[in-house]
Length: 416
Image (cartoon, rainbow, N blue to C red):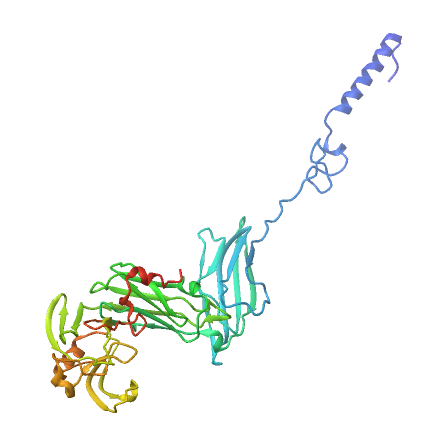
C-alpha cells in the first residue's frame, strides 16, 4: 500500500497497524493457529492454570486378616478363629478341617461361625480339633464397586494324646425323669486343674427358672444343685461346652457334652431309726408306712439326706464288700443304693423279726420284700431319703450327699 502523503497521517497509520497487531495477539486463536494438542489430550494443557488431567484411581480391594497366619503349625486347640475386614466387608467365610482323633481314626468337618452385623468381622463358634489341618476360605467385597476378593489360609493344630485330653460325662442321662433332689453330675476322666475356666463354660437352664450352684467335689467331679429341691415338672437342660477348652496343666477338653431331663413328682422317704419306722410322702401326702431295721452297734446307719442312686434286682451282698468279720452271703430281691460306701434300702426277709423294733444290719436299711418291691417300682433316681435318729452323720461326698449342706455352704464349692 502506498504511504500517505501527509507525515501526520503516516504516523497515524503506523499506530493503527500496531494496535491491531496487539489486539490480535491478545485475542482468541482459532484451532488452526494453536500449538500442541487439544485440551484433555495426553500432555496437553487443561486451561490457563496449566494442570494435567488424571484418571480416577481404582478402589482398593477388601483386606481380610485372620488371627491365624497362613502356614502356622501347632496352633493351640482352644483358639477361636476370627477374621477382620477393612476397605470392604465379608460376604462368606468357611473353615473346614481334616485329621485324626486320639484313637487314630480319620476325622473331618466344618466349624460354624457368625458374621458381625456390619460384616466387618467373623468369629468361629467352636474351638479347634487336635492333629488336624484347617482350611480357611474368606470371601469379601470392596467398599466402592463391590469387586469380590477370595483369600485362603491353611494351618495345622497341635497334637494331643489321650492323657492330654479330658472326657466329660454328664448325668442324669438325656430324657431321664428324676426325683426332686437329683443333682447334675459332671465327671472327667483326666483331672482338671483350671476349674474356673471349665466352670465358666458349664450352663444349666431350668424351666421354671430356679437358682442353683456348681460345687467341685474333686478335680474329676463337679455337681450342680438348686437352692431347694427342684420343683416337680421342671425341665432342665445342661451344656458342658468344654471341647478343646484349656483345663490347665497342658490338658484340654476332649469333647463337649449335653443332657436334658425332667423332674418328676415329689416323692420323699422319711425314716426314723429311733422308732424304726419309715413314711413315704408323694406330693406332700403320706402314701405308705414301712417298718425297717438298720445298722446295729459298730455299723451305725448315717443320718442325713441321701438320694436313691441306683436300683438293682437280686443284689448279692457279702461281708467282703464292707469288710465285716462275720461271714455272710445274702441275696436281696430288691435293692436301692443310697451311698457310695454301701448303704442300700433293700428287702431283708432274714431280719424280719427286727422290723419296727431294733436295728440289726451292717448299715443298710432293711424291710420286707413287699415294701422293698413297692419302693423300687415307685421311686425315681434322685428321690430323697431323709434318715434321722442316729448319731452318725451323712457325708457331703458319700454318694449324692449334696443336700447335707446349706445352699450358702454349697456355693462355697464353686470355682467362681
